[in-house]
Length: 326
View 1 (tube, rainbow, N blue to C red):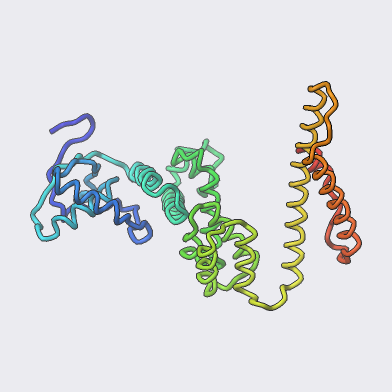
View 2: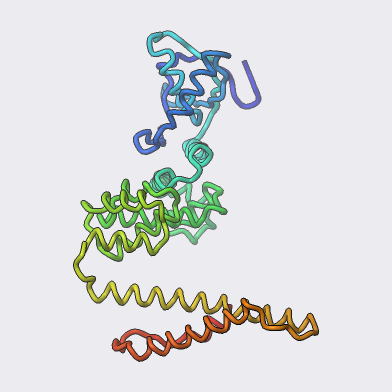
């Protein structure tokens, strides 16, 4: 029966194949969702929330993989069981786009899903230069599928940063710098990006990365400071840290101090402005007195820092442009 641009076809469940661009080993299945679908199908029957194409004699589904697995498990003892599904003429490019959108909806941008999606798209585009030309103006393509090309192809402009994070992780994994499977146990792409960066900076051996990830997960603290400290501890234990790591930490804390100082200056400027707008004298409050005491302590600590710093290679001069520009 005809329905817009597709037709329905009755197909045996055992003859349904997943999207050829979807790696089921790297795209984990949500067992809870499978069980809910099985109960629903068993109770109300199968609804055709699956879209497929016929390609080289096979019926390949574009989306609906959880529903497909639910069907396969429900009717594993009934090889002749068939379902009526919509079949449409879908190109490889469209199959990938549909797969990517399904992944984002099902998994809410987990690092493993993002990385696998970006990897599949990158390999697909670079193996078919004509597809790149469709999204990049003629004469500007190098034949490589970078972050911008992938974002345009998938229409993931809002997720451009996720694509670049994924490309960086994939690059480090290709160089055997990071254990990608371990890194992608992080709950978000940002956390995975931070972990990958610290694995690279600290040069933690691959065989120790799984242990570091477990400790970070147990702490439930994915701040950059905790991630770095955990990875350093995994590598050096109780041994003193090498000078290069101490210098890196020093510079990082100085940068943090600059940022906090900039925020403080903004807050003080707002207080001064508000006082002027009130057109009245403002009696010192307990909070203002406390703030003044804190600032006095800050000045003393900066003086102590300058007096005790003996490493001339570290720049401790305040970045006035950074603070003034905030």
